Image 1 (cartoon, rainbow, N blue to C red):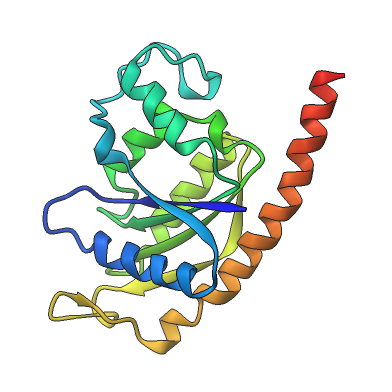
Image 2 (image 1 turned 45 degrees about the horizontal axis):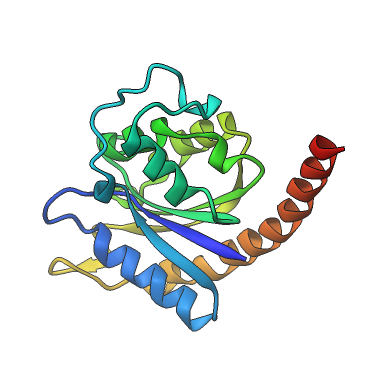
Length: 190
């Protein structure tokens, strides 16, 4: 099983890299196979595909490269800030390029913000449901007021302890959805 960790912000000076590093440490300590994905590395412009991403009919090379990077994972953790009571625009733009790559796969969220990023997570649940992805209920959510000190990510235990049960669900669901995808492939090839 491979987990794609989607870094949620490319903003200069963002807190996101610190949270992504913490997530990577948690996954490494548990011996899980993962890769961090930075949408900024794909030079995605404002959405420029004529056909919606869910169709998988990509015309542009940057979209094809981003889709190929997203595709090989069995599960995802989206590390998302909350911007203006919702999702960060650049990440939403990046996710809008693709879609079918998330089908029949679980998604978990690590969020942060003034109110722990919970509104961003709720918005993301609607987006990923459109792609036939399943979002695990639990989240690891962090407050910029209590889980960051002097600009450094230092999560309080009460916040950090939410990661393990969220990850347990993600791993269990990834195993289950692997069987679902295998059955779907058998049906298509039959």
